[in-house]
Length: 208
Image (tube, rainbow, N blue to C red; front, side, top):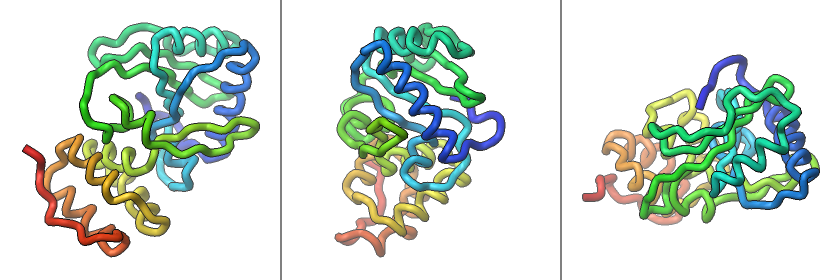
């Protein structure tokens, strides 16, 4: 999922989602979705670089329905199966902003992943975007993704935000375990966030 071009502003994300979801409402389609990626972080008040908006859906037919609703906008990638990432994926452009809709069809047991398994469907917050109440994946899951990718320009703002506004230490630990993050990255998180936790943070260890 690309991050090219100028970084998005919060207003870009809100306006684009409002436009896309209004188009979906116009065709009387209703299904579960989640906003993930850096766009989800912007919506929750984190200032970090964001290049596009990611929408996760559960079924391929949901991607097709969304694609039909967005048919008046430029299609940059028609809905199709991407075997290398186990996604059914489409990309559109709305007023210069890239919007990506996809499934992620990998079977996982943990609920600590941002895009796969039960995690995004279970761990989310609801935020107003224009006239829509939008379910957005929790920041603890996004932080673990950025730590795995070793992108400090993303994980440093996330750490600062969670430290300032609070976080769920159990959920964050679950997310780090799900990604099997190396000890040095777990220690970075522990040192930055331990004073905000409601319980002592143990020395980080990888699960077997």
